[in-house]
Amino acid sequence: MSPDDNPAGAANAAATADPPLFYARHVFMCTNVRPDGHPRGCCKAKDSERLRNYMKARAKELGLKDVRINTAGCLERCELGPSMVIYPEGVWYSPKTTADIDEILKTHLVEGGRVPHLMMRPGDDPPKKGKD
Image (cartoon, rainbow, N blue to C red):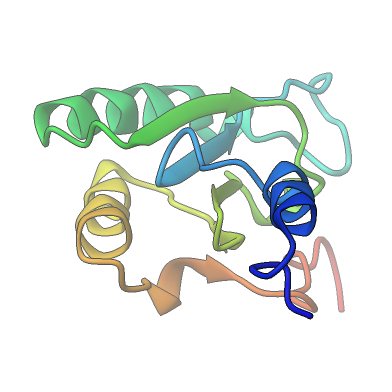
């Protein structure tokens, strides 16, 4: 017997299914602040707030109504930042310039592709400090 044959089963399946997404894509940009000189650094010191504001304005100019650009607290990739993650795909980026933001907007959010040279991947190591 399938859920289609059982109205109660079909109703239960519908009730437990994930609801529709509020946004097709949800972008979180870390703007966390750590004290000056913190060994891990922080994304805000790497200009993440300005980049997030730029991305939000550009997304609006592009008419991306199904995309939400949000500020996030620490995303735990401080050394590789500024850190950004786009859901529902879970793709992480480290944009450093407004040109990087434009490329992510066009390639990922408009066209549905990826920007490999800006992506962060599990296992990426932070830049070494001091002597090797």
